[in-house]
Image (cartoon, rainbow, N blue to C red; front, side):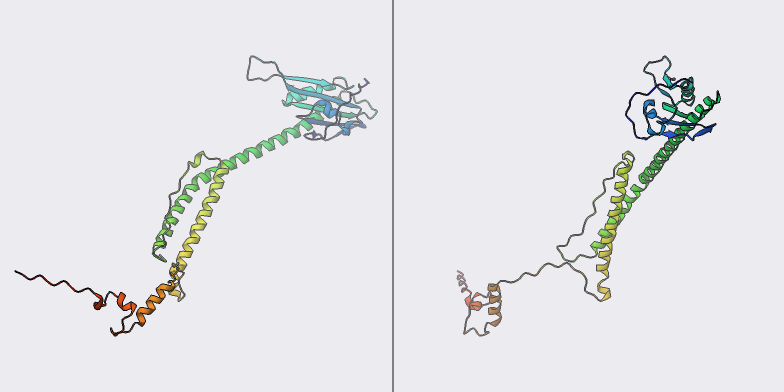
Length: 301
């Protein structure tokens, strides 16, 4: 049996993004395949879990840097490493080409002491197909989930584009109702009824899903606030009928000055007899005694 060549030292990578096959047992020989779309064949051969294998057969496939006349077909380069199992690497390379995948695959074989003959190549290829098949299945599931997520986002986005104008219309109607109710309840002459301002409606079809979701939350908050204001005004309007004092916003009373208080008191306490004139009597515009005498009319000729 050909002896495998020793591997050169190479850093061992953590087993991430690696797909493993089920093992195949045949007459004390054991086969297991590892495939990775991103790690190199040397990375896979350096893993501790296959370090004790008799052979670590490898193959890898990557896009070619050469250009072709046909743009529909992309050229690939496939290489292999028999690692002491003659023609084993070539058998692995054919699996990569048949399944049309990129990356590296190895098949680790632990020799059991009994020659298997040509069936060993079937085991090598079957292990490789199993590992690569798990990768293809996982990739298809991810693509399916991504497509479903995109479809769900499109559905939700179309829903928001349809309902946001309805929310805007509801806000406009509620604001008009609030203004109408406030007009029936003016606490003081200085109170001003809140005027509704029109909503600047954007073109919702041009906005991404995240912006539409933010607008939906903002519209819901606005509707909730207006409804709360309407309830407050209705409570104020219904307060007199319930026998309770209505909530009214009043202007604070102006406190008269000390001098003005004294003047009012003097006028109220002033004597009614003209014999004792007071300051209030003198200053009163109704005191005839203080009026100047009228000029005599000139005699007519």
